[in-house]
Length: 93
Image (cartoon, rainbow, N blue to C red; front, side, top):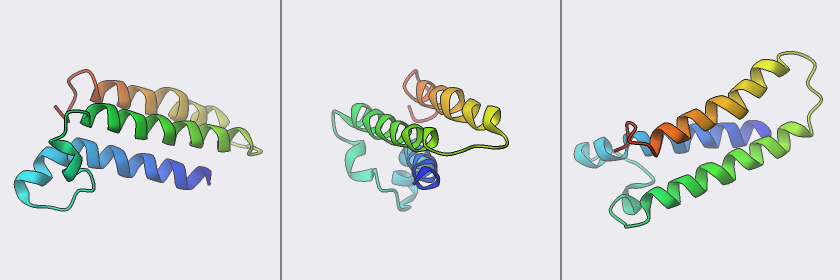
């Protein structure tokens, strides 16, 4: 489940950052129908937070023997930094 949640986070992140371009190009994006709504940012942030929370909950249940410092850095710092960038005028604006 940990791997699934990390993969889901990557998928959501790609969809958020590419949504405007995908609409222009006519490409598939699962967030297209939400992009024009008033609460698009809140919806995306909620999905990110729920997904990262589930990834962290599952990560804590694993017995990590190697690379714990790297995985922790990605989960606690990297994912947060990308989310913060998105909502502070990042690439999806």
